[in-house]
Image 1 (cartoon, rainbow, N blue to C red):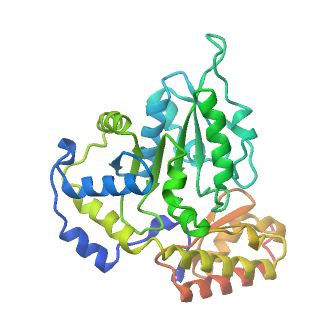
Image 2: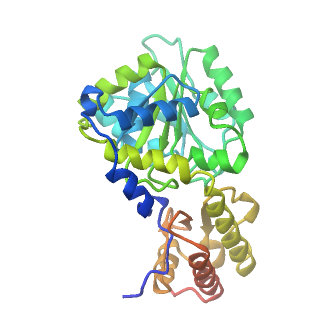
Length: 352
């Protein structure tokens, strides 16, 4: 089996650093179901403050944080609208429908970029018993399947104004909001205050082993705590995990710029090797999506061949491949990925 020299399958692959493990081992803990874990409380308060909200709730996964955010705003039989490649509709296994009786509709988007006309072409309110009522719009920032795109703050403000005017709530799937903040220079609170609820992930670029935080008003977070327990997400001495999140906030946010620079370098090399597979200027953060079909490859064949060179990647469609930079991929790993990808792109694809 070929040794892995650059594991770019996802930024969820990061492992706790030695310093993070030490912080976890020394964490003060209590029973979080009773709200008695001091480290969890410190994490929730800190993230809520960073995002300009009153309160937060620690969850084991980002999907649970998003599902709680949707459940708070959308009653069974109402709908959520999101773009067609949004994580909440593409990668959370229909959980909103299964657990909360929520229906959904989607709008098309270019690389996941937000435009007010998209959601507002779907939002439906005040229609009585004749159509499904829209209760929530979900925005993703950065956009995973869009290629790590950063949502412009101006577009977010336009959507906020339009949804507020018709009484529709706004939730931010901010799993990689840290990346958007570092790439754009926009303050986390400037993003966060535009939304009724925000979820952020600690176990992707920030390198914690587990955990996300949902933030919103104190009233909403009290309700979310009840629903977290109903969904089986009540936790006990979980300060051991929350300590990893606090450590990540102290040490791993600004370093995301290194991931962004490495991803950009890789994209530029691929564009030179096979023009048309990627537009380097579209790579804003740590995610690169290659249109390998432009070089004659199927995504499956490209991923398999890249693996033979020791690089792992993820096929997001029959023609596109995603590669994600993170804490555990350094300059040497990036050099290896550049060599492997450009070699494969310049080679002849296998005959189907």
